[in-house]
Image (cartoon, rainbow, N blue to C red):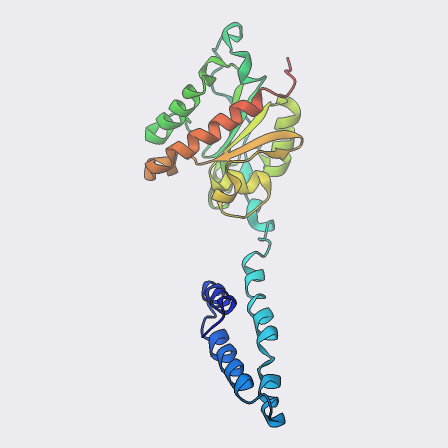
Length: 248
């Protein structure tokens, strides 16, 4: 007859993947100690069975490495952030909804020489921005981010390392919000190498500017089921864009 506490501990140990260890050691000493309580020689077994508490603490350390801080350094090594370009320069500021804030800066992986709205991924990106009514905002800018493998091929004379180029763009544009599309943009701008899913759904801060991470268009083409989550991220970015002070 096992006590309820033992059953609960057994279930917990099974969750931790050490189910064999605890039951085999815990059940035996209880019976042995109860049956031979008058005998002095029967007490050494419980003394030998006392290792279970240390062993339980021994089962926890393996969980600590799982939560170990990721290596942030390689996130931006070799990446090049190209100068921002206006996406909707012909938009009439008189008809720009005030809820969109003063300025948006979008960062996504791509070539500075390509049309950001070309191809299927470009059309999807355009649709995402249109859904936010950003096509009505003349101060929506995009910075193309070149990965290390192609950075040397796409780099121009005015291309600086990613962190320096971003600081310059923020100082010049005073964006209300940063929209980081894709893993490369998120890791490079935030200097963190955790999975993209852990960076989504929350507001980050870059040089005092709120930043939101979401999937990029190429990924959404491959994984349409992620579109509702991307839309939620875009709505978060729009809500954050309303708070900063507008700039001329």
